[in-house]
Length: 261
Picture 1 (tube, rainbow, N blue to C red):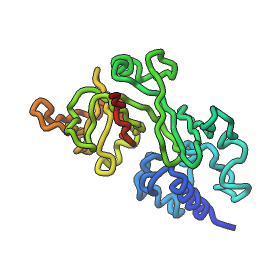
Picture 2 (cartoon, rainbow, N blue to C red):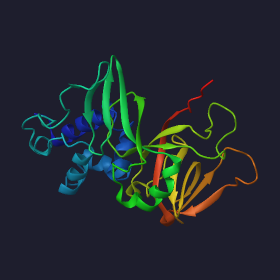
Picture 3 (cartoon, rainbow, N blue to C red):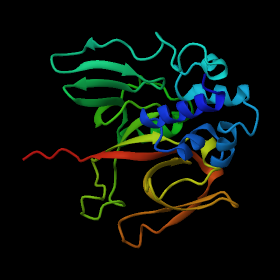
Picture 4 (cartoon, rainbow, N blue to C red):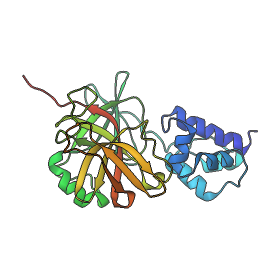
């Protein structure tokens, strides 16, 4: 029979293969551990705690704690995972919904995610209400994006406003574009934010909701530095304290604004 360490390694491999994380390092970040601490747990150098297992099952509720500890049963609990496929319309089939309300649909061999969309007209409301987000704001809609895997986490869609991130290139952002973003929980900020891999972020602070490039993090001082792609002098880099940041969302993909001719 596999050891507890072997079973934990199987869980790590499954989380990565299932798209919950790109590497074991990212799993550690999501769990609130350093990569070295996670490695010590997986390799049996420190005791396996209930706290760790609770965090691990928080990534996917199907993970069976009893199986991890004893090897009895299966890694995933049957009957509590993906929902059965049900017809949504002629072309789309509902597939599943994650714990944060993002819905997934299949269309042929393609997968789509539908999330709550915050238009720039509702940014003020978002700032005022973002500590207690509700899914049924009347001026919020929904937006659907093509994705490559079912994912956990808190996803939203934002509409871009202004021209601070617009350089006229395909890599920049212009007013009316929409972006799919995923929230990075504050517990993960203490481990260095991988902004080289995820350069663009929606940052919520004070009364502002801004799309910017994250270019620096001072771990000792708890400071974040943001950059605008537009080189105009009015869009200078700025640094703010992590204590003043209410939410951070990294950009997954962009949907260019629709143009009618």
